[in-house]
Amino acid sequence: MSDGEGDGTVVRRDRFSGGPARSFLSSMDADDRIFEADLAVDRAHVVMLAEQGIIADDEAATILDALDSVADAGFDSLPDGEDVHEAIETAVVDRVGRVGGKMHTARSRNDEVAACLRAQFREDLLAALDSVLALREA
Image (cartoon, rainbow, N blue to C red; front, top):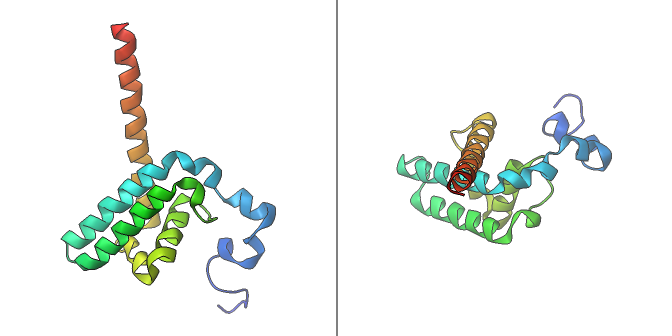
């Protein structure tokens, strides 16, 4: 970088690393709602990467084991992050090293977020339908 302010985007530079600016930019307080959906989408993507030969089967297994470990530890164990997506990736990489970063190969951040939200909305809709059916039976 030519401005000498460090690596990464402006969101990740030192001036936004803590305090009120970081909490304003972070969606972690609301993201516990999509934690399980994010893990499911990450698992499906890793399986696809292995099935297509984009990552090795042993790498996929390592990443999937790390995702299971993250799920077992729960949302509250995630490191601080901009959002749940970044926090899960950090937790996976912390567990298995650089191979964990391969879970985002061939997927944009926007694709990931959209898939996670769709998965959660699907679960919300199914739960609402179950409630309507139960009410109808009553």
